[in-house]
Image (tube, rainbow, N blue to C red):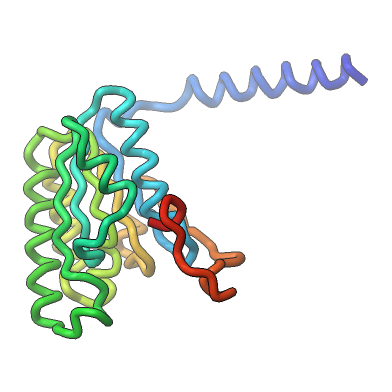
Length: 197
């Protein structure tokens, strides 16, 4: 049994090494989309930010929609010298109840994100909840793709939020869809500090 397992793992190792040797470095930052109805889209993006920071890379964050409420990731990352953080949303659309104001805030946030992507100063730019801004047509997917096309070669970008546009998913290098299986909110449990925000 042990010899069979060792042989299978050696074959797998050989196959894996061959596949890795055939891969190519695109020599540019990648575009990642985190979408879906499940929890964890922003959390995953901020996990990538921590990974980048571990490699001494510079990170920029532009938050759409969420507004000025305190989150653990914001409190932590905003204090780091290698991170530039802009919270530019006015809050959830059901809170603002002012479409023109929401559109203006989303367009200002995207303008800031576009500037950061093109600057050549950032290894990673996270545009948190931008997919929601596109869902409500506060900014167009065509403008977002044009901004991604104009980004500096070194800059990778993560775009988060439910309902990512199909055109954006087609454009991206990686698309992850979070699927909700179970959520405490539906069981009447409040959001928990340190877990949910």
